[in-house]
Length: 232
Ligand SMILES: Nc1ncnc2c1ncn2[C@@H]1O[C@H](COP(=O)(O)OP(=O)(O)OP(=O)(O)O)[C@@H](O)[C@H]1O
Image (cartoon, rainbow, N blue to C red; front, side, top):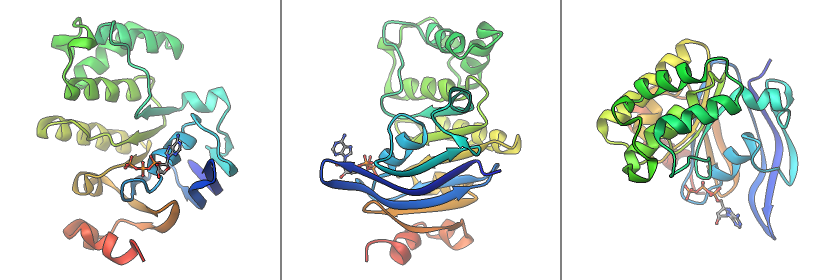
């Protein structure tokens, strides 16, 4: 079983092809860093993988099934732009709400567990409206992990996090990988992502430029990837 299979995916915005025949797959338990310059198509791809947008052509399968299927979507945790977090609710109320929507048996316990793990327990009753960007991002992380998903699709998860929060997220992801979960994350923060990644996928102007194991060379010199496989 593949965790994810992307087969010949194109995405057009009007005449503009944001993704051009992208194909790759991910085995369960892999941690993939999705890399590419601004506008390369990373967000577009993650939204399609998460079932938030449809490919213009091509197929995406999650755990060998149609990704639009509700059960499959419940197996995915998403972090990215446009994933709802309600400003007029507290951190706790947000997580409690989503835990109920996911049909969790113990929504209170799940909400409290992830507030604690993301370091938000002390501000759990404050309205999200009053949160800094970093606190919001922690809450977004909590939301992604909340329903115990087998796969995490994370668009720029390290954005707005300070060093402590980055380390915290890296630890959560390490634990998730130890538990056999699959992770795909897009990022500009190459070093933070490459430390965790087992594999890399590099997109260049909508096309797959490289897909393979994360090597020591990449870790020693993240720019190496772009120089070797980047802009022709
Ligand atoms: N809704 C949209 N309508 C039209 N064009 C879009 C839309 N969304 C994205 N694009 C274009 O598609 C291309 C890919 O965008 P995308 O956001 O997927 O890139 P990205 O790699 O995530 O970049 P960034 O790192 O800047 O977020 C860009 O040229 C962008 O301008």
